[in-house]
Length: 130
Length: 348
Ligand SMILES: [Zn+2]
Image (cartoon, rainbow over all chains, first blue to last red; front, side, top):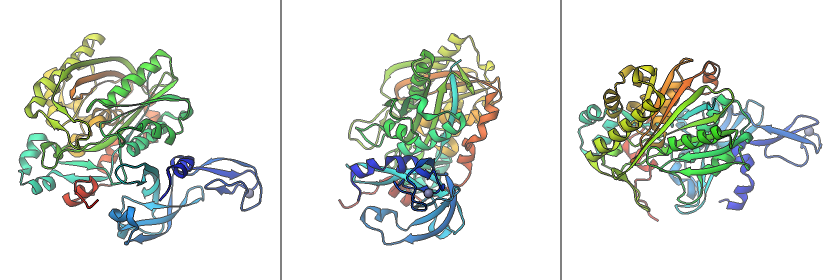
């Protein structure tokens, strides 16, 4: 379970998919980093992730941890976005049996989790069929 | 002239048919379908709420407007289903579209007219020159009590409008509001479901306020029903918009393009705003469009828009409303619907 403070710090990534693009080699870091893992440079420019891509791989979770029990079975996958960035996220609004590698998906803003009926609601990105 | 510079819709994918609800309560589906002119309604996924749908509709409006979101000076979300009782939906929306931090935001509530209230304020701020751009969203994930007539219609959806003075796609020529204290529908604090005044929701409520608002704006603007290419009325069921249209002297063909309720349900704060998005999807430059909302309690906001040539350039930058309504649907059974809408009491 995440804390409100951690979730708040991650808003630029969770809500707006803000990444950093290496000024030297063009590698896109998501989330942003201080040092480019490809070339060691420290200069970055802003980059907003592409909104669509395709499923590279996925798994279907049938025995879910507590806060996600009601959602099982559900899929978590890695998508290769149209800018080449690989993004791990839940794939929703799709029957897990109908999922296919290579399927087109796009990013939507969804509730990711919530701390019970009275706590904070955490928002972020998920993937849905295009 | 100030007006709409971008618009966007969002309709969730799940649908439940009238038959599926009627089956559970032993009700007669054909009489509901005929009586209310309803076939099915949109249901949000468990991870969707007024905030998530507001964000998606606002992103579609931004795609059409093509502006820098940091120049948006005001963000309003109208809904009767804000996820928090205390914590603004507008702040999350403004953050998600990157309109923060130099932005004024407020959550509005006025039964089904909270969305048009936001439009009214956003437009006024732009006209006054207080902000360059202003965003207004009407969104709801409305609930009817299980077995109540409202359960057949209470649906989910969102519509967003960006207002500005430069390059409008629809100029705002006139606005008018009509409000009285009328107890036709309400929900007290901490109550899950609303209550309503049954037949009282018709004549002294919906019909009186919509005709008052529409007649008021036509008098103020010197326009008559035949001057409008299209008209959008609030859509609590399929019948009311056509009946009020007839009372005012509008024809079916002026109403039909924005009439979504038979397949969508009543999206409350999103209802007439979504009808306006569907109308803008097909309107031609020069067309005059009248939108008349209705919110129980009770009031009605109306707007006269004149579509500009820019509509042709922007309308296909985001998904059209009827494409979302008709495409990619996922039909669910009542049990799944009850689970999604948290109508099932679980262990603590
Ligand atoms: Zn690098």
